[in-house]
Every structure is written in structure tokens, then in C-alpha cells.
Amino acid sequence: MNKLLTVNETAEKLSVSSDTIRRWDKKGLIKAHRSELNYRLFDIDEVRRIHDKVGGVSSVSSYKILKERKMTPYTVVELFSGAGGTALGLENAGIRDVMLVEFDKNAAATLRRNRPDWNILEDDIHKVNFSNIKADIVEGGFPCQAFSYAGNKKGFGDTRGTLFYEFIRCVREIKPKIAVGENVRGLATHDEGRTLVTMTKELSEAGYNVAYKILRSQYLDVPQKRERLIIIGVRKDLNLPIFFPKERNYTISIREALKDCPRSEGQKYPKGKSEILKLVPPGGYWRDLPEKLQKQYMGASFYMGGGKTGMARRLAWDEPCLTLTCSPAQKQTERCHPEETRPLNIREYARIQTFPDDWEFVGSVAQQYKQIGNAVPVNLGYHIGKTLIAMLQNRYDEQTMERFKPLFFR
Image (cartoon, rainbow, N blue to C red; front, side, top):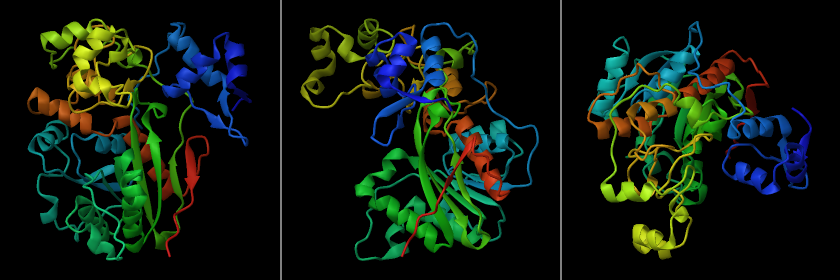
């Protein structure tokens, strides 16, 4: 890494304003490093890449779906598989799926359509017996129902009835070398952090050393500002290290991701919303409208607190996409195309989630959006997979991975 520079030093080197550097930092286009005195410092080469990209100087596209040529001997059981973002990412890293469990009929059909050779179990996970299954890894993006950390220390019983309980049950029955849980970043602060404490303690009591980290997809070869909380447990008798993917010093823009994107179906805006969004510039949102239209469009929300930055939002070509939702036309989370006044379509959604163009989604347009919006980006799954392989091989690469100490529970 180059010598890190302050905001003012970085701005002077690139002949831009300090406010520009701060704006890029706030948007997640560049990473700030903290000095001992808590100053924000920047790598000049990283900032120069963004400067050139935003200015249209850079012509090299860094968008690609990452994939290894050879498979490893390692295997995984995938729970709550959805449309296959994590499963495909792990496969691309070289990990073979031995079972995928998915209850939603459309998502299960998507998996079968694209990977007819996968062992896909379309069933309620509560009914699945895992005791005869063998795998090196169990991975699950369990839906997170709200439950509190129990002050009366009921332990495992406190999570009973939730899908996290089924994830832990699967881990206890299979006893994999590594267990991986995935969820939204909000899990870290749910119930003032007590929910996450409960989950990590349950995994520890199941016999695993545990660590967790929030991964930012825009720094891991995904053209999207999507953050996911990843929990990793390593079986205590194996004495294996715990790694997480190390963030890269570049981002991928929507322009790079959508280059030559195939046309497809997609939602449309009603006439009134379309007329409003025509007035919003790339990267803008409702505050870029005349005040009269702001009040008209926002209604009572205009007078409420909070930035509401997702409303009437048009994306920007030279930035990663905002986090995709299950519906790009929904009022509070619009994802309007940077240039055309329409929501991103199905194939554009898939590109931004780093699904390959030949990955087909089954169901209505609304169901397809839902599957893609709920997925883990394929390239994020790849980076997690490469890290899991390195853990199993006890092979540390400080250029691409960060080592973590496990949590300690009394």
C-alpha cells in the first residue's frame, strides 16, 4: 500500500476539492483508513482510479464473474439456497454442493433449471433429517426472525422455533469442519446486539470457535453497495484459523456491469412516477426536485426526519449500484436506470448481483425480482468460498484474506 494521505493532501494531488474526496468516501467509492489520531486517510492510487472512472478516463472494465478452473475435494450443504447466489459462488471457488435445501417453489425451480445435477431438496427445513449427510461445510443465509437474547439464560431453547435454530440443528447433526451463517448487517445491532450474541454463543456451544464480520460487496468484485454479516464457525477439535475476505482497493461501476447487457422483461413505472423521475438527475433523488414537487411526491414523509435517500432515486453510471431490493419500483426504494426512466430490468438486476447471463430465473417477473434481490452476490460467494478453502488448507494469504481471532465465551 502507498503512503496514506489526508483528505486535503489527496485532494491537492488530484486537483479536486476536499469535499469531492469526502463525498466519494461517503458514497462508499473509496475506503478511508483511520490514523492513530482518528484522521481519515486515503490510498492515492485507489482514489485516482475513482477519479479517472468518474471522469471517463478509465476505459478498462473490471467487471467479471470470478471462477476457478479446478474443483477442490471440499463439499458443502447449502440451506435456504434461494436462487443460488451463494451456491454458485462457492461452486465457482471450487467447492462442490452435496445438498441444497429450499422451500420456495420458484427458487427451487430456478436451481433445478440451471443445475439439474445438483441435489436440490424442495422441502420445509423443519422436516429434513441431516444426520446421515457428510460435508466439510454447512452454509445458510437463514431468515432472521426477531428474537431477544434471554436474560434468564435459557440457552438453545431461546432460539427454538426460528430458522436459525434449524441452521444450528443441521450443524449439530452433520458436524461439518466449518459452519457459515449469512444475514443482513442489521443483525449486528438487533436488540442492541444481544441477538447476535445469542447466535454466536449457540454456535460456540455446538462445538465451534466463532468470529463474524460485515463484508462490503462493493470492495469484493460486486458492482453494488451491499453489506452482509458473515458468521464463521470452525470445529474446535480441528484448530483451524478463521479468515475473512480482504477488501480490494477498487470498485466496479454500473456502467461496467451493464455493458452489453442483454434485454429482458422488467417492471414499469406508473405515469405519475415516471414524470417525476424524468426530472431527477443521475445519482439524484427526491431532494433534486423543485420544492413543490418534493411535497407532492413525498406527501407526509416530506415533513418527517431522516434523509429518505432511496426515494425517487436514480442510479449513477460511474458508481456501484445501491443495494438491490425485491422490487425496483417500490416507492421507498426506487432503483431507476441511470439514463432511461424505468426500473432496472431482470437481466440488469442479475448482472449487478454477478449472476451469469445464462442463469435463468423461474416464475413471474415479480418472483424473479424477489429471487435476485434476496440473493447473495455470486462474486461475494466466490470470495467467501476461496477463504473457506484457505481455512481448510490452513493456508494464509494476507493479500486477499484477513485473519480473525475467535470470540471468547465464558
